Length: 341
Image 1 (spheres, rainbow, N blue to C red):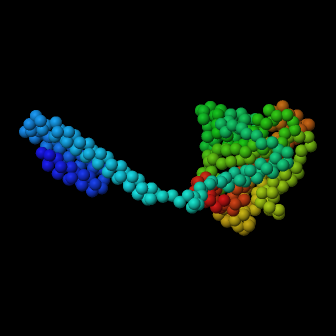
Image 2: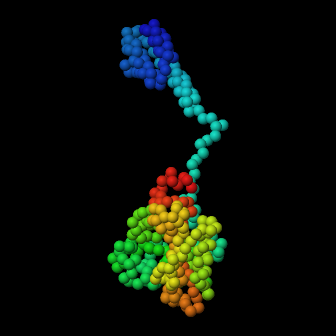
Image 3: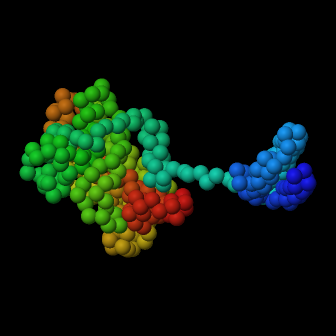
């Protein structure tokens, strides 16, 4: 029996030293020390020994078990250390190498133009104001001298929330004229950028959601020439000296007289192309002198004060600034397009 335990010691220690993985070590532990292991099989022969021999053999058996367990733990530690060394070598990081530069975003081209416009108007003493996109029909239409029956108040043109057509998504930033005249002291110089909504079909120059910049001046002695000079100055600051513009007579219920302002098409230089629908010009804003009825409705005496107002399309200004030929590109969020700016 003593010889059997000696053979087991030599064989087990050799096998443990040759083991190359934690799994194989566990298999060896079961093989030698498990309930059905080789040491257990040897100990079953203890019954054949005399009473004097059993304590000595039991002591040898316990020592053998301890030696095998110690060898297994030592070999497991060696294997774990070797595995960690390989992992560190495989995942080694050279801290002296430059890291990958994170890709940073930038402002949308449309908001670059908006910032330019804000800076221009702030430099002329204007205030930036903000207002609700969900608006009352009284502010979007009635107080702007747009009575019931006007085509723009039809359900085919406007997004309404209520059956009685009282609450809607604003179709223009012009309601900010009323909010400003009701809330602010005279004189007033303000612009109000924001989103507006109309039931327009999507094409190269139209969208059901777009951005306008409303502007208004109310003071004594304000004239149409002030309006034209201001708008020409703004356009030249955006597009450069000598930018070609034109003013066309138009009709808006809340201004009288009224006009529309166009810039010469940046794509074709006025010759006519798909971007300008063959006209050579792109409409960028509507404007005019604030209607006396609108002034009076806000408690301002039209015999003492006068004013002008405009609403310009921000997307169309961005198209002209960056030579963008299709408005839909501004909203599609294609990074291949946006990364150009």
